Amino acid sequence: MELKRALEQHIAVFGESGSGKTVMISSFYGAKQESQYLKDSLFHVVADETGQGNRLHRNYLGMRNSARLPAHDRFSATSYSFSIKLKDGFDPKAMKSSPFDALRLVWHDYPGEWFEEDVSGPEEAQRRVDTFRSLLGSDVALLLVDGQRLLDNAGEEERYLQSLLANFRNGLLSLKDELLEGGKPLVEFPRIWIMALSKSDLLPDLDVFNFRDLLIEKAGEDINALREVLAGLVEGSDALSVGEDFVLLSSAKFGAEKIEVAKRIGLELILPMAAILPFERHLRWARAKQIPGKVAENLLSGAGTLAAALIGNKFQPPGPVGPLLRLVGLVFSKEVVNAAVQLAGDKLRKANSEALAKNDYMTATLTGFRMDLEQGEKEQILLRSQR
Ligand SMILES: Nc1nc2c(ncn2[C@@H]2O[C@H](COP(=O)(O)OP(=O)(O)OP(=O)(O)O)[C@@H](O)[C@H]2O)c(=O)[nH]1
Ligand SMILES: [Mg+2]
Image (spheres, protein in one colour):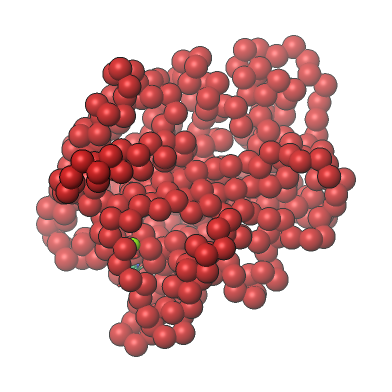
């Protein structure tokens, strides 16, 4: 079989110690190994490193079966690579016309201590910079806001929120000189910074709008300040969303005697957010001419292929294309991209069931991801930027 590119999406997760990073990735991965999931889903999620996958799975089983929490692994920044493999039964013809035949998610954990505290020596300082560099290829970053800490500071949440955001800001500033070689701003950099409430099960009355309002009311200035720092790191800083998207997450319901891993919130949105949000957002910015050329090229290189896969590879002869669309993908006509961008609501559901009927699993999976995002908004656990 002809070997094609995997569409690879990276996501960076920033969270302080105890904010729930390890539990989250364990719950994300473990849930996808449950027999019911394997049966129902169109794809399998497989850790590219077997040992790492087993560790996450074991963490999950420990929680599910014995209410045992994963050990803290402070300071250990790790990247996890997962392949999203389509289940057998897809139509090889549909696959053949698809511009890629696999998806991959790379998940980067960045420990918040490296923002909170001074590093212990030059070696750790170097590791901190190297780790940050390794996640620069991520399109999406999640900034974890710890639900437990919000509860602990009920009524004066600003105390926690302002210090959290100040830590992130100062951490980034302290990395700046080493990140920017010769002071040159970065082209490749996460441009969508989502505020994510972890442990949202502890705040059952808070929907995503309340979460947004709380952040804006109690720490709006700090979000602005963080945005300014991030803007100072990147080329084309108009193409940047900081604190404009919000999501609620919970990895399980934690009781004294049991941990109910089936009661998750928002974890099903992680793959769709990583795969689809950048596509939608980058095209929108490109159309609004918010991106300078070099940046556009970088951001849009995958968009055309994703557009084609989303609408089921209805390839069209390349008519005259403008410069933007030439970047989006040489062979993709304006119609393909427009059709993909505008796919929503009933049209989206129709495209999804048509793809399913044709056993075109790649299109079905990607349209399914977009439906997940719409559903997340309906359930008020996700709020996407309108910009
Ligand atoms: N209620 C609730 N508690 C959670 C959730 N996720 C994690 N916790 C609690 O938070 C603790 C810390 O979670 P971890 O995942 O270990 O945190 P971490 O971010 O990996 O922390 P470090 O390894 O120290 O960087 C867990 O032991 C749980 O008690 C959640 O979704 N809901
Ligand atoms: Mg951890």
